[in-house]
Structures are given as structure tokens and as C-alpha cells.
Image (tube, rainbow, N blue to C red; front, side, top):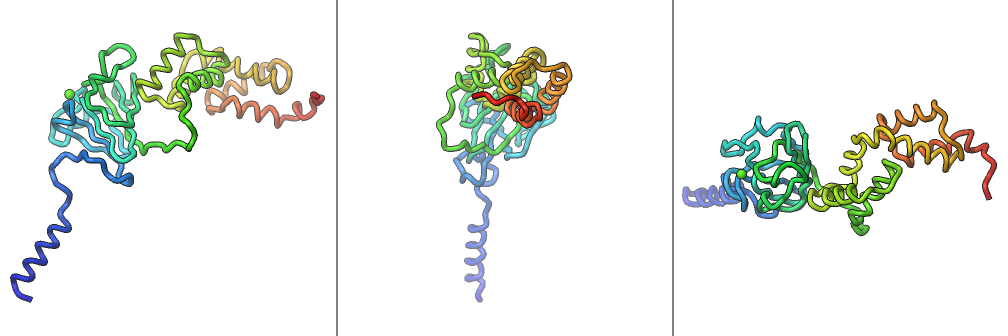
Amino acid sequence: MGMKTSGIILTLLLVVHLPAQPGKAPGRPGPRDNPHIILYEHANYRGDFLVLYPGEQIPNLANGRFEGGARINDRISSIRIVGGAELYVFEHANFGGHVMRVTEDIRNLADRPVPVGRASWNDAISAVRVDRELRRGGGRPANPDQIVRRAYEDLFGRAPDPAGLRHYRSMIIDQGWTDRMLRDHLRRSEEFRGPGVDRIIQRAYEDVLRRAPDPSGLRTYRRLLLEEEWTEQQLRDHLRRSDEYRNLPRRN
Ligand SMILES: [Ca+2]
């Protein structure tokens, strides 16, 4: 094989194995098997950037940098979501303060309001977490009012008041909250930890056992709902498996 031929082969190999555009900001939509997100320093996907993949998180951006070395804490201004990744952004370090779930590109975070206390999410992100986007089952996406009403019924044992409905509807629409995020949030509230849990237990006892809960039952199920994250359904199923339920006279 002459010098010239091997030179051509070498060139071909180099072309084939060359990594895709090194040093250039990724950003074109990729295949679904390579989900990732890109955080940018400026609006319109400009300035320094940082790429993260599902499973990665940065609890405190004060300890991080964009890839080019610029400070990243309270500096992110636009976001690209590629190939079915989803991103959770937090107002404070250690996943504290407000949280927004991002599943589509945001060209300018100044257009995305924070519920209270700040004008927008621009230059206001201090922690991030990346997941693979949950693919929803075929069904129609539930409407936000329905999600809030069901969560209130399940966790507080009551219908939402107008202010609560308005607030959480906006969390779902503007901040991308899922049913799961809403329920996790409501579970941490004073209402759930106090009267909400007791109302759920009382209602389940009355519906299933047709009596008010005794103090020991109340204590046990309070613990299971608060600490083991039992749902109302689990509680009701548990009551239905009791001897007391089996021995109840049947209703027609
Ligand atoms: Ca910025």
C-alpha cells in the first residue's frame, strides 16, 4: 500500500470518528435516546452554557460553573430541553424555595413568573435536577382544576377554597407542577399534618366501619398517613381487611 492510499484511508477514518463539532454549544434536537438539557447564561440560548443528563443534579449552583468557567448561580437565563429530558429548577440551594418543572425550551426566563417574591425566574435559579421525562399513559391529560380538586379531597378531605384552587391551578399551568408535585407539597402543609389527616381517617371509618375512629385507630393511621405516606385508598383497603369489617351486618 503506497503512502498516498494510506493517507486517504487515514483521512476517511478521521472524518468518520471525528466527534460532533467539539467546542460548539449543542442545541439541535437529538434522538430520544440521548435526552439532556442545556442551561445558558443569557436569553436566546447565548453566552456560556452547561449540559446535564438525566440522573444529574446540582444541589448548590454556588459550587458550580458554566462549562466556560462563568459563575452559574443566579445567572441562568434560558434553557433547552432535548430528547425527552425534564428539568426541575429551584429558587434556593438544596432544592429549596419555589420549584418549576421544565419540559420545553424556555427562550427567556424573564417571561416565566415566580409565584411570590420575585419578578421572574431569570437569574434566580440556585439548584437543578434532571430526570428522564415521564411518558404519560395514552389518556387525556387531566385538567388542572380536576387535579387540584382531587388532591384536596384525598389529602385534606375537603373541596379547595377559591384562593387555593387559583393558586395551585397556576402552579400546574405556569410552574409545570405535576399531580405528584402538588400532592408532595400539600402533604408538607399544616393542614394535612393536622385536620386534613384526621378528616381522612374519620371519613374512612364512617364509610367503611360506620363508626367514629377510636383513639388508638386515630393514632395508628395518623402515623401511617404522615410517616409512611399512605394514601386514603390504602387506609380504606386496610379497614376493609379487618375482622370488624367482615363481621359487620351486610347492607342491602
Ligand atoms: Ca443571566
